[in-house]
Length: 178
Image (cartoon, rainbow, N blue to C red; front, side, top):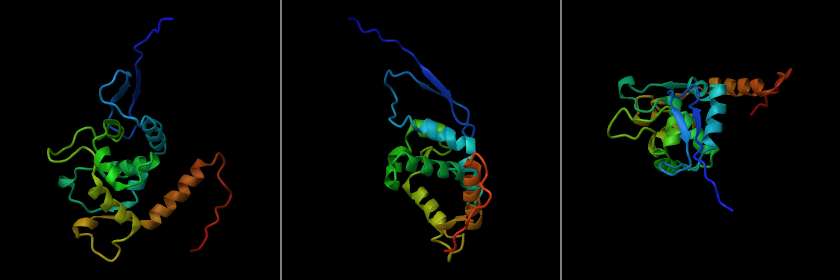
């Protein structure tokens, strides 16, 4: 019995929040990723505008002309990494070179020659410190604390996402006191 191979190519567009580009899968080698599930996760996040909505819950005091990694892409990179099992920030030293992740987040090329298109572990660590509220007693002028979380907005966003995920909005949402 002869095996017949076909050169079928699969294509898809990047999600709405990313810079428009076409992703093509042709199964013949070249630049390879084993994280094809990123396409589904990024599409779901895009439909909810998840990364943009979370970014709105942060105050970004970084100098706009010096920003290499947008807040939405930092949040997206970290969330997609977690969803796909990359829980350690050290994993992002390799993930920052992943072309699929970069395309999905609209970060194909860096604006600076000395930086990758996606963030590394140190940049993402600063974001996590802000999200955890660990810098609450320090000013935003400190190098590592230029991004600050608004916890009331984050709390409200979680409630909004929960209500939106229901086929029928719940009549009440019980809030448990800490």
